[in-house]
Amino acid sequence: MQNTSEPAVALFFHNALHRKPFNEDRTMAKREGMTISELEKISGVSRSTIHHYVNYGLLHKPYKTGQTMAYYDQSHVKRLDIIQKIKLDYLKSAKTSRVPLDLIKHKISEGYSLVKDSSAPVKSKSTGQKEKIQKKKEEIIEATLRLYSNRGYYLTNIRDIAREVGISAPTFYHYFMDKRELFAETIEYVINNFKKETQIALAEEKDPVRRTTLMFEIFASHYPKIGEILNQLRSGAILGDPWAKEKLSAIYGQLMENVTREIKGAMKAGIIREVDPELLAFFNVLLDEVAMTRASMDNKYSIEDVIKFVADMLYHAFLTEKGKALFGPYDQSRSFEG
Image (cartoon, rainbow, N blue to C red):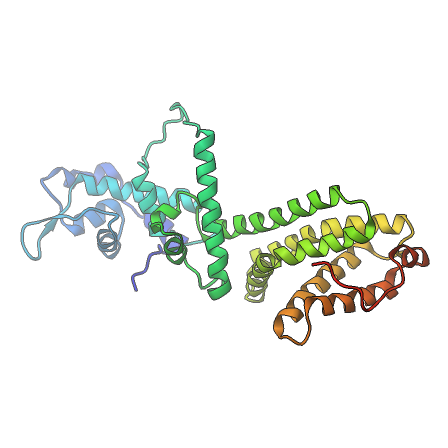
């Protein structure tokens, strides 16, 4: 399989630092053509990389005068300069040491220039264009979630995602800078949808019993996607990815927001006893996950069975007498509204 990524940052900067001054070497390019050895010397790019660029379509083919003789010109020098500039710009912001060749191809197709004119007017996108872009991004995110469930984040590459959506790999970079940015936006998309629905539902409901039920119902409906995100981040955390650990912690914090707020309100109203609200919120989120996982394992327990068990435990462990009176005597025959 052809490698579609670039060498590490250290090698890139080593090559850049050891390039000869343009004025000294580029006189060779003024001739009708130059050999690959001369192009290698002028550009500072190794011949193997030049061949790779040609084979991948990043660099146009040289003029051949025979089976073994090929000549390059100033257009090849300029294109290599553009490629190096794209790589440098990417490495300044990306949290990776490898530059995808499809990204370079996309930048070139978009008319990337060595000189960026800061005085040129920036074309703003119309509302219709923005909506179209957002719709396509969401389509890519949904496809990504499907692939994650089968292969996981670390085994899913950009070509897989592009194929699933029906676009080319270079087109992917019109919407996302790289796979990590896509994952970050996928997380934001899933969690924001969950939080938005929860906030809307709770804004219309004042009864504490019904609010509790609503929060779990909404969590259950979003859990297939939330659970997939959590699973991928846990895998990354186990592999020692610090970004995954940081994101995992942040997501649990977001999932706990509404629960923590509800617990603090219930404590203030004397419905539950004094406890650490954040710990209890975290405990509740984990119990929700356990309930969803256990119910999906086999047919022995339904989601209603698991929730009844969890509700009984929480009822006796945390509710005050006032809270028990409000929620009513716990009844094992009580049905789950889901």
